[in-house]
Length: 312
Image 1 (tube, rainbow, N blue to C red):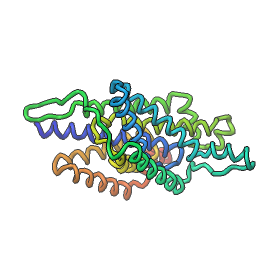
Image 2 (image 1 turned 180 degrees about the vertical axis):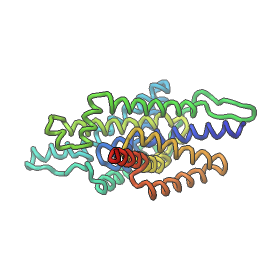
Image 3 (image 1 turned 90 degrees about the vertical axis):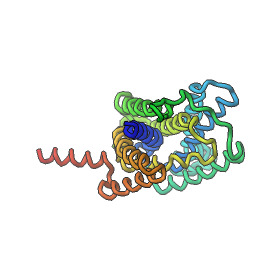
Image 4 (image 1 turned 60 degrees about the vertical axis):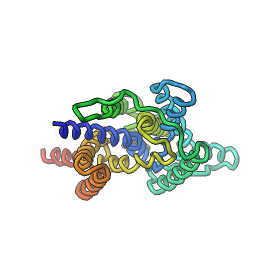
């Protein structure tokens, strides 16, 4: 009984971690075609902003988390304007030499990887220079739940609920709002969307801000559970990329399915053999999935649906 409860809670923990780590990355990659290797450092910004708001400014933890999310979203807008789209350098170029200085990094996978990897290095070292090798942490709220000799953090269970709520919110945004419809139109055919009057540049900026804000939210939510170090983003990057690739092209469904499948595998092996083997099992499952499902889980589902429609 205790082992079953432990396994269930471990699954919820793994699911929440994977979904929250991957959501922002999936949105930016799925809509903009940008591989953000600085995703872990965006999580770092959210975690640091939350922690500093709580410890230095004395804000309540929930308010500090909101601050961390908004700070990261704002930082994301700056990165998108200066680096990803090059809008600010090109605005200066048009007014000085009459031409653009840089080309946008949309759908340029290799170029976006190099640019954001450089940004990642700068952010890690910048955090180390400004804040040192560590900062004060905030305590984990809600205490533990106990079942006999078994004890588990209540806050981690709360995170699993938040991850599900996040998926629902993202689904609503991208299917029920005007922004979501124009964003999906931009994904399918940017030139046609632009011809129909969609401000695709604004869509990209808003998308990067949302993806960055979700990364900041992840850092904010996990801040009470982490050691505040400049390299804390590394803990999230592997799971985030694995979940995005295994999930496939559908942002919401892909993240949910990959989070469920990979979370279950990681939970089983972690429960039986420890955290190290749980992560190894997750990576091994990802390699198998990529070998047999190169378009990810949702890509496979779309292929099956297309074949059924052709058969009918």
